[in-house]
Length: 303
View (cartoon, rainbow, N blue to C red):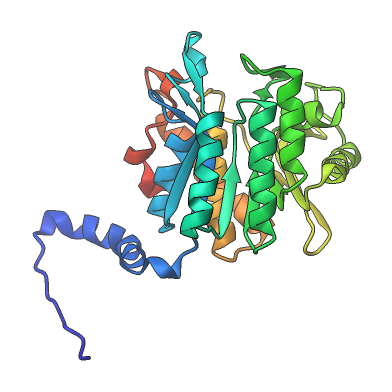
């Protein structure tokens, strides 16, 4: 079958925009070229966090992205008041339907778990999918700055440990890594040797590779990691921007996963995600309402 050539004449003002999105358009027109990703995370009605933050990024990067909400949340927790609906019973009904329809995914990324029962159910599903070659990424969302988020309980920690047991890669922040491993949180930071020991404790729970974000090592804010493919420990420093947005961890996760599924090594993918996130925060640091997160759809060109 002969190919058709289509010539499109663009007004000058639209030309630069077309050139910016041309690579993404090509990928979207050829979806089989990219791996399919399932996001299992909560969905906020107001605010760019969790699924609402990750889905636009991965879609922009060209990945067919699907979602399974672990909870419906009225708004980001930073507002202080919120309403939440756990979806465990809904999820229990989804998995048999998907199995009957033959749905499968190349990668699964999990985030917030609403209950220990839900986590066990999702962990079993991820283990079953991993046996067929699916890569499992786990962001054990529980807290930050030495404290657990509102509503997070000891059962939540056990839930996340269930998930880590089936993960190929996890990326907790320093607070979450401490809670998961029953390690003392030290706001002043730790040494490089202690950071490697903390990574090893996470690996003992079951994950193959691990990152720890928002960590001070020998006086420098950084991300540390262990890559099981080459048994390499690594440390990537960065300059912290003194502003808080909810959802930045979710955006980091999405960018990281996008690069990894493109075949880039873990260390390089981590650096790329860190740099992109810095650009996003820098551009939006003066936003009036930071509680709703970074308006990612307006900033996709920074990825």
